[in-house]
Amino acid sequence: MPDRLDGPRIPEATVARLPLYYRALNETAERDIETVSSEQLADLAGVNAAKVRKDLSYLGSYGTRGVGYAVEFLLAVISRELGLTQDWPVVIVGIGNLGQALANYGGFGARGFQVSALVDADPAKHGEKVGGLVVDALESLADLVAMRGIRIGVIATPAAAAQDVTDQLVDAGISSILNFAPAIVSVPEGVSLRKVDLATELQILSYYQAERKSRRRVGKCTPDVQLQATEAKTS
Amino acid sequence: MPDRLDGPRIPEATVARLPLYYRALNETAERDIETVSSEQLADLAGVNAAKVRKDLSYLGSYGTRGVGYAVEFLLAVISRELGLTQDWPVVIVGIGNLGQALANYGGFGARGFQVSALVDADPAKHGEKVGGLVVDALESLADLVAMRGIRIGVIATPAAAAQDVTDQLVDAGISSILNFAPAIVSVPEGVSLRKVDLATELQILSYYQAERKSRRRVGKCTPDVQLQATEAKTS
DNA sequence: GCATGTGAATAGATTCACAGCG
DNA sequence: CGCTGTGAATCTATTCACATGC
Image (cartoon, rainbow over all chains, first blue to last red):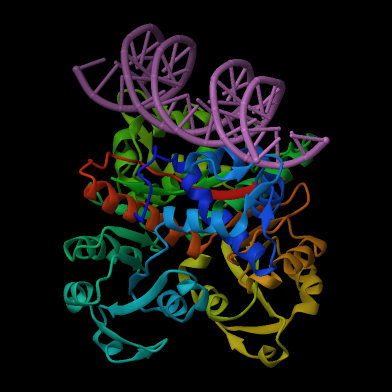
């Protein structure tokens, strides 16, 4: 069977939710539950039922009317769609606090991902063992990527190094990058980039915190707001 | 002057970009540049110029036609809007790999945030020093929050503990939460919640990586896709 | 009968394009 | 003239509501 149906292109917002359903379904499967309704799945994933149905409908008609979705089957469909039927080796660049934590983080290699190389620009770190792997020189990046079939790069360097590291990852043939550095990096077409930024997340929280305070002060009522945000780019 | 203009409510998507502009403007200010055009700012922030102008227009008309925006002034406007004119003490719950990394992460306390307490459920960790702070018992959470005026909670526990910790944070009076645990947690109205999930980010990358491979195989061309995603909730 | 799947309706975000102003 | 600020147009996502089919 092919890795993936060549179906209609799935909306970005839906793709971003598939991992939530995937996790929710795994938890459900572990409880030996065989079918779920869109409403149950919605509760577990923290969204609403209509969204679940619409999202799943992009994958095909895999539910049974009057019954719901077969958990194991839906899991198989989603993991194929997400490309989780194979293992993705990952390289972490920048073995500081965060890089080390990521290297040690068990849940990282959760399903389908494994940290396969660690590199750092600082020679003092080379040879050090972190999470069972030896830290290599940044210069050996291209070799490591080629030899270990690495497809995903994680940037955990200081902001100043981020663009340079990105370029090196791209040159080494990586086309999926997760950037933890607080810097905007640009990538050529055909490379996917997602970013995770602590300071940004805190600042967004700060906005709403301050808003609540200020609205309270002027006697207004904070309405229900459902925020959503994430950031990535595939050029 | 008031902490914040009581202007029109700013769209969520715009709020999520204000931190990007804030960072870009800080970098610009450090280079002693006094004005920026929407186009320059757009390049630095990785968005397009029309978006910058529209976003900034929600804050008021602070640009000068034919010239651009005064960097320092705009910085002041945005930091007021984001509530960064004051310091937000933060508590980190769960001092495992990730929690430790966050506690040590310098850029965390970047601007306006400071880690003020660390708590963990494991008694073995109590008294340990991480990033200059002593790890306290989870039970003392409410006291710490009250005594140190903590407003933001960061969850870095295993998934299984996340909802329980969330409830405790809320009970302690916290109304802004950043969740790193790979679990959906629910919060009562009036509490802001954002989440950062490694596995989810990797799985999204995996989707597009797999898509490129599969499209290539069937001879189609991957179009320019500009993804965007983040996730939060203020109920 | 009951829950899916989906067109149609609505809401929200992005982009365009240009009037307005320094 | 150049760049902002903004209505209008477009595109994307969410939600509704119900026909469909097990």
